[in-house]
Image (cartoon, rainbow, N blue to C red; front, side, top):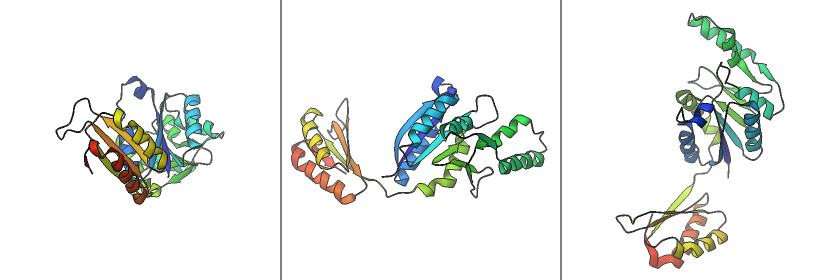
Length: 245
């Protein structure tokens, strides 16, 4: 199963000054593509912290996305952090520099030297173009570097999303009227017998209108295996079941 990780970068996220909307967006998008988001790290604007997080998650996931820290100001140090993660220097990419100079000239806006920092990337990084992108997505090995501004984050992800498509998830739900205690052992047994199926148990403080107190979810990539797990579970907990879907 393809797995991904997200590294969210920014003091403003950790302090709560800015609400992170990129994370729930990416979770939903990856889920629809059949990709498991295996882990999320939120780190400050500090090169060593960024480097450590990126290095750690890049080593154990097929793809990694970063959010934030790619502008021209002093706290935009994502490129430096990712370069450190892969032990390479930061270089000024000639194509990005040309794009920046052309844009500022076209807009008749003075180009400050600091703005050219947005052309700096880890050595060896690749540029990915898209039909609706003014600026390409920067890819460093299996790390896709995205900005923190939600509108641009979404636009850039849209340009690359199809390359991550995998087999879809199959999800089944079982609603039970009892609390978790009586079904704990059967769930553990099914989880042991069907390791390819992820089983979740989500209790309610009060019964729902239909009487259920716990929602059970069984999901995986193989529809037959998921259904087999559901069938075996229902044999054991049938007296507790309200309905399935």
